[in-house]
Length: 222
Image 1 (tube, one colour):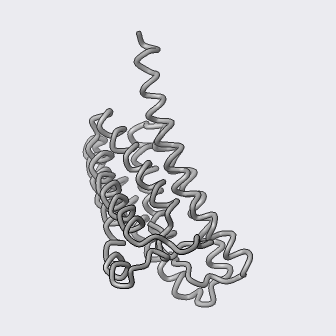
Image 2 (image 1 turned 135 degrees about the vertical axis):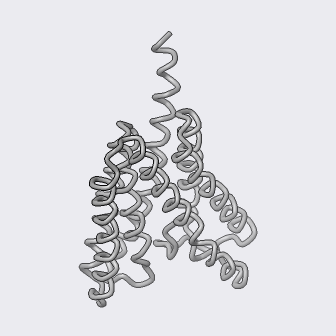
C-alpha cells in the first residue's frame, strides 16, 4: 500500500524536476550565443539575475522545509543561472551596471538571510514568511513580461519570444501547481498559477502571430 501511494508522489516530483530543468536549460542557447559571438547582443541580463535570486530563495525554503524536490531543482537552477551570469559578465561591455545590479540583489538576499536567521527564530513563522516572500517574488517574475505583450500585439510579431521556453514554463508551472496542491502548500501552488496563465497567453500569441523562422536565442527570458 505504501509503495502504491509513493508511486504518484515520485512521478509528480520527477515531473517537477524534469520540466523545471528543461525550463532553466533554455538559457543554454543564450550561453552558446555569447560564447560564439563573444558578445551579449540582444540578451537581457536581469532575467538571469532575478531567476538566480528566485532559485536561491526557493532553495532556502526547501532546505527549511526538508523538501528534496525543491532542493534539487533550485540547486541546479542556481548553478545554471550563476553560469549564465558569469558568462554575461565576461562579454558585457558595461560591466559596472551589471555589477551594481548584481550587488543590489545580493545585498537583498543578505538582508533577507539576516532577518530570517536573527529576527524570526520560530521555525513555523520563518517558514511561513519565507514562503510568502518566495511566492510574491515568483508571481512578480511571471507577470513582469506582460508589459512586452503590448509590443508583440502592436508589431504582430512573436520573434522576441521563445516557443520552447514557453512550453517548458507551462509544463513546469502546471507540475508545481499540482505538487503544491498535493502537499497542500499554498506557497508552492499559488505562485505557479500565473505561470500557467501567462504561458497560455503566449501560446495564443504564437498561434495568432506565427514566427517566420526560429531564432537562435530569445530576447525574453521568462
